[in-house]
Length: 95
Image (tube, rainbow, N blue to C red; front, side):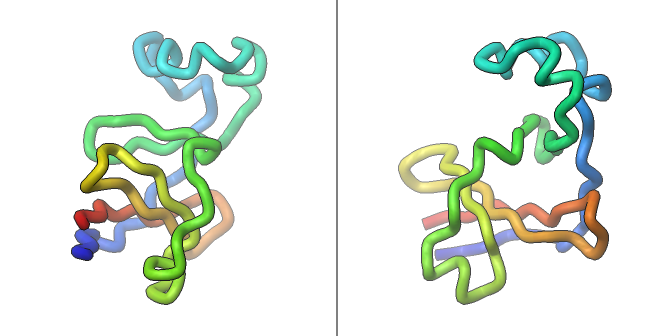
């Protein structure tokens, strides 16, 4: 497994910070929920909701990563808490 990150904290965004195209990705949420939610983050041209992440497998948790969202069978995004309460650090994970 290869973990690629620059360890740059990324601030969490609210639904108001998203473009209409980005908001459309979260059509499974009510519009008012998207607006009030402050758990979105941009990473490598995509927007993720913290709800997209599941608990990281042991192999990632041992390295300090708390969450994981799969992009494909061979790759995904890992997440860990940032230095303050409104940021996270993300990484690309290749298997």
